[in-house]
Every structure is written in C-alpha cells, then in structure tokens.
Amino acid sequence: MNIKKLFFYFSLSGVLLVSCDKLDMPPTDSIDPTKAFRNLNDLNMGVLGAYAPLDYTLMDIGAIVSDEVMLPTENTVSNTVSYRWMYNSSYGSVTGAWSEYYLVIDRANRVLEAIPGISVTGAGQTTLDQYHGEMLALRAFCHFELLKAYASKYDSDGMGVPYMKRHELTYPGRPTVQENFRDINADLQQAKDLIPSGFSDKSRITKNAIAAIQARVALYAKDWDGAITYATEALGQEPLVARNDFGKVWIDQTKDEVIWALARVPGDSKIGTAFFRETGEIVLYAPSFKLINTFDRANDIRFSTYITYDQLRYDNSGGKKSAYLIKKYNGGNPLNFGLTDIKLFRTAEMYLIRAEAQVEKDNSPAGITTAAKDLNDLRRARIIGYVDASFPDKQSLINAIYQERFKELAFEGHRFFDLKRRNMAVERTPEDAANASGAIRLDPTAAQYCFPIPSDEMSVNKNMVQNPNY
Image (cartoon, rainbow, N blue to C red; front, side, top):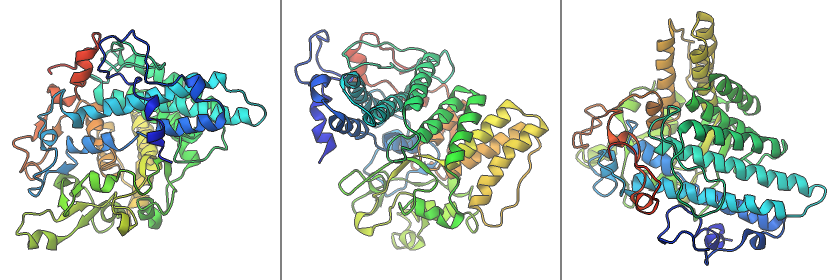
C-alpha cells in the first residue's frame, strides 16, 4: 500500500504554504481526524503516513553548499546555482525542506489530535502511548531540522521558525531560537516518557533515538551538560560496529551502530542516484579534494567505504570526468543501485558530540583528556594501527573534533551546519572551486549563509519575516 497516496487527502490544507487568501474559511478538502482515525490500526497508518515524506533533502543541499563536495566539469545539468551560492527565496533546492518538514509536522499533529478519541484497554494503552510519543518526537525533530536550516542564527535571540502544535491554518510569526529549543525539548521529553523501552524498530523513533536527538539538540543549544548526558545514554544502548563490519552499515547488511534510519524499499527515492548521479553515469557532485586529503587512505576504512577512485574514468574521458565518486550511498544491490536506508543518527556522532561538549564544559587538562578519549576511541575503531593522540589545549582538540566530524559524517547533512554553529566561513580550496564561478568563500555575513524563507511563504504569511540580506 502506498502510504503517501493514502495520506494525501489528509495533508492538503495543513501545510503553511497555501494558495487561499481567506485563511479563516474552514477547509473543505480534509478529513476530520476523529473520523479518519477510529482505532489503533487507523492510527498506525497515520503514524506511517507522517514519517513518509521524510527524505534526504538537507543531506543533499547541505553537502552542495558546503566544502565537502566539488562540482565536476561533467555536471552541466544540476543545481549549480546552489553550489555557487546564488540562491534566493524562490530557489526550490534550498527552500524545499520548508514544505517537506512542515508537511510531516502537520501529519503528526493530525494524529496527535486524534489520540484522545481512541479507546483502548490493556496492552492497547502501551501501543497508543508509543504512537503518541513517536509523533511528539517526530514533530520535535522536524522543527529542529527547520531551525538548523532557516534560523537567522543559532544564538538564543536569533529568529527561529514557527512551532506548529496543532493542525490549523494561521499566520505564524517567528519565535526566537531560545523559544524553539524550549518547545523542541518539551516535546522530546514528553515523547521519551511515553515510548516503551521495548520498542526497538530502528526505522521509527525509539526511546534511544530520542536520546540521540536530544544530544544533537543540546549541542546546538550549547547545553554541554545535556549533550554529555544524552550522548552517553545513546551510547549505552548502541556501541560502535566492529571495524570489519563498518562497510556493512552502508549496504544495509547490519543495523549495528544505526540509531535511527529511514527505511527505503524498491520504488522509493534513491539517495545514491538522486543525490550525486544522473542517467548515463554523469557525476553531479564528487567528494571534495579538501575532504579526500583528510583521510589516511591506506588505513582509514572510511575512505574506501565512502569514496571510490577510478582513474580510468578520468583517463578515458580526457580528464573531463571525475576519478573520485561518492560511494557511501551506492547500496548493496546492483539491480537497485543507490537504494539504501537513510541513516539519520549513528553512534559515531554521539562520540563526537560528547567529546565536543566535554571539552567545552571543562577545558582543564583533565577535561581535555576525558574528551580526547572519545575522539581516540572513535578513530581507533576506524583506522588500522591508530595510536592515541594527545592535545595541548582546548582549541587543538576542538579543531581535531571538527576535522573528525568532517570525515566521519561526510555527506550525512552536517558539515554546512557545523560551520554555522561555530560562525565559521565555508572555504573551498581553489582545486575544488574550479567550476564554482568564484564561489570559494562564504562568510557568515552573506545572505546565503542562512537559507531563505520561501517566497511563497513570504507572500501569503503577513507575519513572516525574511532572513537578513535577502
């Protein structure tokens, strides 16, 4: 059954981008949740329908606008405007996440509004609580992703995004980032109290997935104690995968080290093809030389897992095609090339979150040693023959953590937002910017350092405020 089609009629009137000027009129193209959801089976279909629109949108665009990919000469067909930082509020590649995540939020809110009307007994209450918790956590996660992409800045007084707690048509303004964090954390905590510990489906939000979300949110909020606590909680439930099995994670032969992944089956969108390749083996984006040069190619298992090197491809094209290709999302079935589950949270990120939060909390020699242990433990799991490194001060360790995030989390939607967290410029090497039309450095003062609020939202919503300099 196609969940997206099933839920289509539930979603038309709930997103923020609407074409009707009279938003006070009752919707005529939606179904009352109390009539749509009559029992637990109906509710489960609604829960699945809420998850369904989630995709790799911010992984895609986050890579393109950062320094982790480069634009090869062979790409004459796709999204060069974003790579060259020429986008504005009408450019769908950077505004598409807005409607995607608010669609998920609206679907989640419809389910949440129906829950009080569902009668259950016995074990049914546990299932109802699970669905309730999943939808609260999904709502929080989507608002956080929107905050990452569209906040004017991550400081507490920055302009955040509308936090939608009901299915309704309205003119929401922009709360502060601090208010967004408050609402996100409240939803996550309530969700965590509801979801049973025995629920272990990693394609949906489990209690451990909530801990991982909380850790990431705390990192962005600079809540160092919270980041340490939640990352430690997640690590206690999901250890690192064995080095020899790391490659299996990316071809879906093991779920070890995966905390939450979007399951993909034949017929779903393919991150491995839609992200980087077109028909005819045109490489849209290749790994940047800046990224490639950070790896110990001989000993770091991530290099051969994430990146393919094909010199013949370069030679046989007279230098017009890239010899380096992104391998991370190829999948394990040649008949379904590029089809693989989308890993949203992994154990490795929790190590890096805890290391960063620890050294930010305590930059004494003892604090640096504690933080460095997490970094060294992760490197040892990835690099053959690795010898633990020591760090003389906080800044050297922070630099190493960011370099490790660059490598470990490559193409997973982190790099652009990591730089933004630190208010650092995006800087490409001249080699990576050969086809960038001068787009070598993006400073925090530039408009494109934040994604714009979509022009449709701006034209309809009288209370919306655009990000600076657009």
